[in-house]
Amino acid sequence: MRIRSGDPIIPADPLAKYDSKVEERFARDFLRLTDDWDLVREPEAVPIAGHFFFPDFLIRHRRVAGQQAWLEIVGFWTPEYLTEKLERLRQARFPNVILCVDEQRNCSEGELPPGARVIRYRRRVPAQTVLELLKQQLGP
View 1 (cartoon, rainbow, N blue to C red):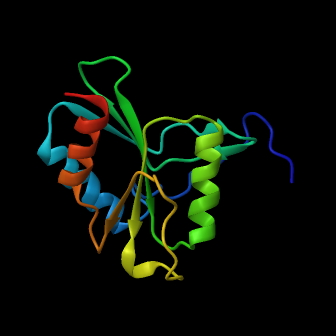
View 2: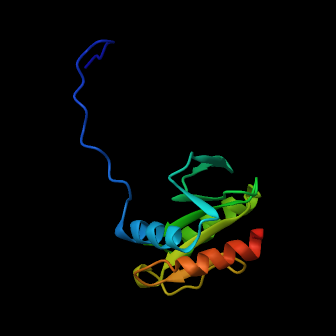
């Protein structure tokens, strides 16, 4: 198939704003809690350690330049998957990443890597806990 400039292209159905109800609820809950932070859904991919990191959200302070964190919601996981992801983030010295891990969907009973900035959740990512962690790590 060859597409040229001027060829009629029928647009596809619009993409869903969120990948899951968990992401949608988190965004709604988080934005209700604060006027100080912006929540950017699926920001640009971040190159790290020879791979790309595709965070679910970038959380950026509205008034303090440079105050930001990336948030990844992890549904199905194994300890090996999280260990590898966290190791890549550490190798790249990638700061301010928060992983929210669904306790009910894990496929292994193994523990998370030590020192990980992880928030465990069931059914709903606790927006208040995320906000408190941001304030601890970044300030206002």
